[in-house]
Image 1 (tube, rainbow, N blue to C red):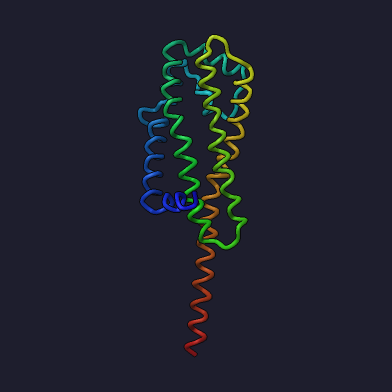
Image 2: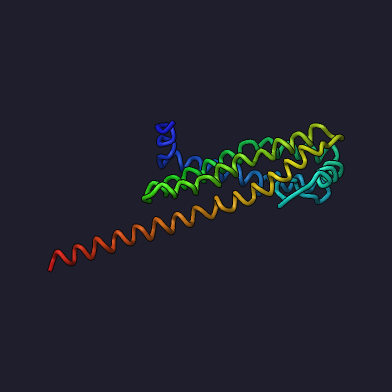
Length: 191
């Protein structure tokens, strides 16, 4: 497992994962804009999993407003949304782990937890698929679990994304300190 992770964290693989993540994000949000297609097909209502939170009543309202065309658009979004969270989580994990390797101390590894949690919480997509596939009956349990997962995913995602600039800053400051010490040591030895 460790060898596989190290092989994946090589430069080309990291770049490839970030490129695929970017392409999937473009497809979902910009072109062809699958989230926008859901909103247009569902009379201006946004997809459940792009909202900050949602309830069973919100799910029933959305799926009823969507109609057949809207539910089909939503299923297309959900198909790509099976790949997008994995690429997103993997991209964040790889870049964070590359930065963490440059720092001393094991506590920095705790910053990987939010990316893992965010990726797992994208399980909200299973709740959305359940809601779409069981229409016209929308079960309360999948809707409550999906809504709660969305809120938790947003929080974990925020921390996971903020961890990257924090790690970049920390690694940069660490490298600057090492450079300053090395330069001061070289200046002392030349005297």
